[in-house]
Amino acid sequence: MSLLVKLRRGQGPFWGTLKRLAQSMLRWHIPVFWLTRPFFALCYHLHVGIRGLLARLVRFFWCEPIFRSQCHAIGRNFHMEQLPFIHGQGKIILGDDVTFGGKPVFIFGNQAEDNPELVIGDHTFLGHECSFSVARSIRVGRHCLLAEEVRIADFDGHPVDAERRRAGQPTPPEGIRPVVIGDDVWIGTRAIILKGVTIGDRSIVGAGAVVTRDVPADVVVAGNPARIVKQLASPSSTQ
Image 1 (tube, rainbow, N blue to C red):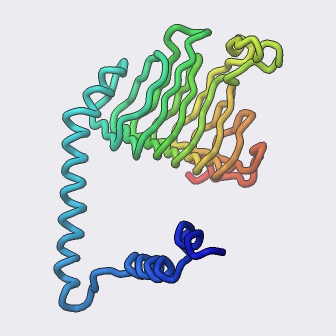
Image 2: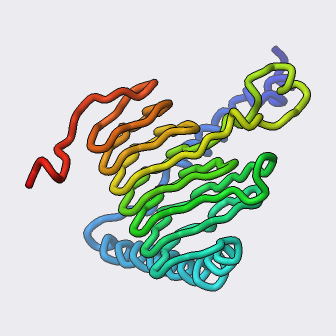
């Protein structure tokens, strides 16, 4: 291989030395030791504090007002961290002391209903990237905990029939059934709740579970499809 070709490909001795020098520079860093550590620790707290202050200002003056403009009703002491993503038109009703931990996603399908309804009960927490796909009605009870990336949908999203899908038709009426989540329900990370499901009070849905049928009160379900793996003590049995 000629020297000219090697230089063009960065394979000559000069280019090899330059490449090694650049790689070593990428590994350099400002030393942190007993003398500089207090200064950089202070810088860290300043960075976090300023970033948090800016986020609160943006949330207070911009994100929360424009989100409230899209809601039918919001109770007292509502708290959100990021502006939710909303697609389509629907009725959002939030109870008192509802908290959004991150950025939830609200998707409304308006083919069957002009104004599908999403209701979140008092003292309920939604984790980051919780997703609700609503064509008719999804209701979440009070004091519920939904971990990050939980998916709840009351419709299939597309027709089961392949010809209908190819024609771009919406989900037919039989593919839409409301979802009801009871009070004090805990739903683990990345669990999926499908159409027509009712989850009883105080039950727990394990992480990654796919719930395809009703869940009674005071049980733990897990797996795909979700099955009862544990019976919990009901309030009446502990008295």
